[in-house]
Image (cartoon, rainbow, N blue to C red):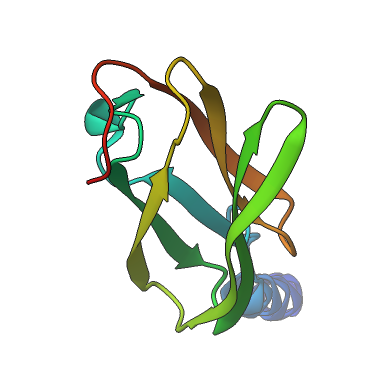
Length: 142
């Protein structure tokens, strides 16, 4: 009688053991990084906040592709002053995944005391950065 009880108990324990071995335990949720693009001034502490009238000022901005695929960016740089907007640059920049490009841009403020807003847009990503600059000091063409 003992043999009759032991055999089914051993079979049952064996099946439980096999089941436990083949049981897939849930893994912690694996999160996929969200696709993102970084747009920033390459030297934010050195933006031309003041420019001599008629002289050319330069700044740099960077685009860092973290979209996890090659991505094209519609870039526009504009200058806003006295209610009017002037496009300084408009182009498409294509970047492989995980790469960065830094672009240089120039602008000129003609009138002494004039304030302008310089804005960089990634039109297809709805991202923008900007800064203000004023024509101050002497005059003359640089």
